[in-house]
Image (cartoon, rainbow, N blue to C red; front, side, top):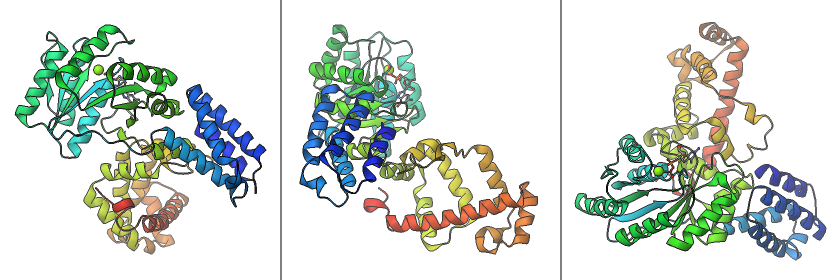
Amino acid sequence: LADRLQKVFSKLRGKGKLTEDDVNEALREVRLALLEADVNFKVVKEFIAKVKERAIGQEVLQSFTPAMVVVDIVNKELTELMGGSQSKLARSNRPPTVIMMVGLQGAGKTTTTGKLAKMLLQQNHRPLLAAGDIYRPAAIKQLQVLGEQIKVPVFSMGDQVSPVEIAKNALQHAKDHGNDYLIVDTAGRLHIDEALMDELKQIVEAVKPDEILLVVDAMTGQEAVNVAESFHKQLELTGVVLTKLDSDTRGGAAISVKAVTGCPIKFAAMGEKMDALEPFHPDRMASRILGMGDMLTLIEKAQAGIDADKAKEMERKMRTDGFTFDDFLDQMEQVKKLGPLDQILDMLPGAGKMKGIKDIKVDDKQMARVAAIVKSMTKEERQNPDMLSPSRRKRLAAGSGNSVQDVNRFIKQFDDMRKMMKQFSGMMGPKGPKGGLK
Ligand code: GDP
Ligand code: MG
């Protein structure tokens, strides 16, 4: 979707002024792009009508940069369509807050249960998980393994007790043990059926959840929206979690779910690992779909993944030009923690547009080569990047098994990076965006 929309907008960018025909033509493309991304037909129709209403008329036609106005309108409307602002997780004033996970089989309920618990744990909460899927073989075990991995307790009563009883007992257990959140994992079916809905309703009746989160697989596109609609009719959902956004590049489900069901998307899951869950920000998702990147999510991710003390120290160094090769080695280790580089690049504004950026592969081998150069440096050299004279560079090449050109290229890259970091950290201010580390 992003690629296609970028083309539309770059066409508009080339223009000085827009005519009504231009707007119409651009919106025709936007419409196609949305339909291609499997966005619900009705949603597309309404969306286009809204944008058109705002775009045609004096605002765009007389504007100095008409293209930007259209992009801005599409961006704002898209954000609005996906719920406007971020929708927070409910919190009961009589703990525990009970969260019930529902959805079809394979949507990612159990995985998301673990991820959510990890997120809560990081916010200093004491979540308890309840193993309520007694039907799928090994479902209980799956949750127990996750619980062990993230160090969160799992309440289970085996597969011979009804899920309703399990949920009730888990709630009591949470109260007795001071757990402030209870997340109930439930069973799913391949299709929505009455038996499933009845059981879920009974659980709702028994534990009165503060949140009923529907987990849907974003890859299923419009089907995800249909599933959301039927669950919402039966259970009065409080929110949706979109999973597998790492595999779905089209974003169709994200765009239509809120519009069709009225139910806010609260979280987005983008991977199988336990830290691949993010609060869903409609504005960021809109920017991402439009190809403007997602700097804020990236920065938040960096803050969560990187040692806070180290990050602060690093930030100080970046600002003061004190960034050394030793720091570089450190940084490389930290970057590895953020996850696959192509995923990080996707979040950078404009990265999608840069030719060849997808071909850059910072693989382990290359990292090791660069690390070898740094390791061939003396302690002094590492701390003072400016003292690397040609003769020293020659020695480094020999010492690390690289050519002098390789060494020169790396030092040049390092210098560029240093400059960029200084600019970047200047941009973010000493405390980072919006108040810094949380
Ligand atoms: P459940 O049947 O709803 O409990 O689904 P599971 O939690 O067992 O997940 C089904 C499969 O989807 C597992 O293989 C998960 O690892 C995978 N999965 C869950 N969430 C994501 C995600 O966000 N991205 C990707 N790529 N895979 C996911
Ligand atoms: Mg499951």
